Image (tube, rainbow, N blue to C red):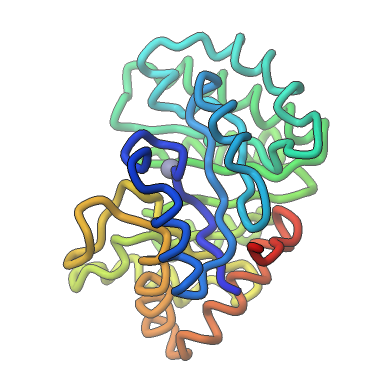
Length: 258
Ligand SMILES: [Zn+2]
């Protein structure tokens, strides 16, 4: 069973045919999904999806911090997300997005608060870092990565940054852009990550593949794995199996759907 380590199955884009999307994923061998948190208002819908093969994480996305959402209230709401049989399994998305540069101060404060909660509760973090790798690594080095680790989602940095992430105890997750013929930098990064720290994801419905459906979906993670495998000189099955194992090591075991 393979794992899409990061998607947004709760988004409205899937309201019309969510079961069919899950069915296509399972038919493609993708029996495990992690539904990443964006804002507290979405957490109940994510929780409702939790079940065999589907896990979720709770956090406030840096983009929402940039939009002015109350990050302190979101952090205060985190403990409740980790209660119950269908609790979240990780903290995030959190991190820094340099595209919204004028809110970096608030983004950093929110990021540090998410990290502190994850360290305190021994939970893995789901990191969203875009055009701010230097600053994000500085926060991670200074404050500390949780002992439970975490994942750098939809990795967009250099091979050197990937290496630093691994040294800090993080997993590095690749998404659709690595399929692009021009993605030389991403392929170099994918080749640098040890097999036991590698993850693959779709970020569906976002980040559609060059000739994939306009609304990306978890079944497409196999094409991401194929591109990662090619970059590493390994076969697709090796990457699919290792990334599924790694996702389970980070977030707990995924059960096969009934
Ligand atoms: Zn995402």
